[in-house]
Image 1 (cartoon, rainbow, N blue to C red):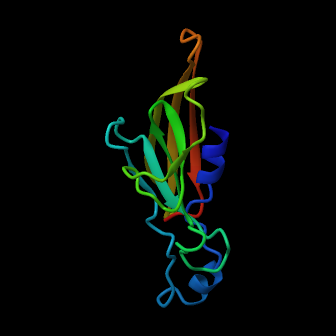
Image 2 (image 1 turned 45 degrees about the vertical axis):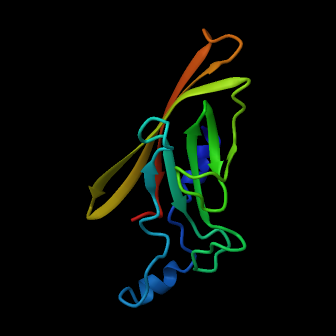
Length: 152
């Protein structure tokens, strides 16, 4: 949960924000609208989240050689991390958790937007449930909420 929430806080980050402030009609953030919730084909709804941020701070949404599209999903009782910008229903992801040790039974993302003083805030709620494979009676549930400060 710590890895997912920490990385998700970066969604929408754009290094050239000062250009947008100087000239808002001529500049746009290529990382806006990158937050997408979906699911792998055989997994529950809302169990995958994709997003992007300006990791190398060049102001461009790079896809090669370093891809700036990130994400997490549930697949076969494991939390996976997105590699090379793969879609939720595509291959090209890597296990973050080991389903031979811990079986993740639930990973669910929901987006909530509120407006405070004419500023829209985006919050992602994350629910995670897991159990030990050798001792399925030992399980944990974690719920957290992440404010995405860079996202519109």
